[in-house]
Image (cartoon, rainbow, N blue to C red; front, top):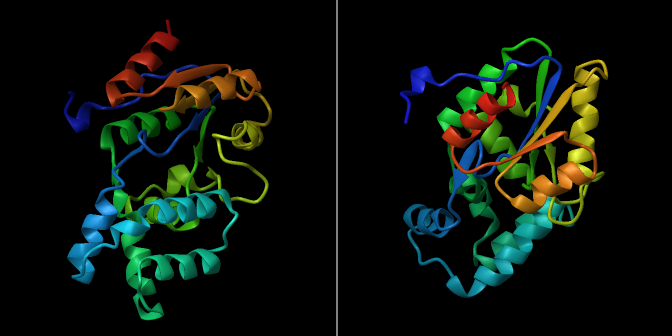
Length: 221
């Protein structure tokens, strides 16, 4: 792997929009971190019998079916905690994420090129969206993120509405003069939908920062 200081964009075409997934692209995640951190911070066993129900509640929060108040209430109930623990849970909830500096450097390098814009497209909830933007210093990349909890879209596993919304945002940034639109995602289905609906002209099935760097290089040939 290249030293972090040597990561930079190899993407040079003009009028380019990058529609980029968050989880497993810009940030890695491991859902096991939440139960582990729960036990470390709250000094009590994690109630493992709630895992399936907690996953359903998470999906409801991510899809916008549950408001923050409704999610908070369900989270406290499932984890057998009182309302005084809510601030702690809000801090713990995003702990599943860790940033991927090499990918972030590649994307920032691409954004440094003229006539290039980026819109994050992520199946995530408001708490985790804010934490990734603020805690990892990604506000510049996530300023107009399209996230599944927003009321005018559906999650990526359901349809292509998030990609289409991101495309419109990118077009507005570039005064509707978009030559190339790249969809970046770690899920094949999501990449295919971005292409099939016409939101993207190119797609990259992401695996590693190196794979993204190679894709950018190939695109310029």
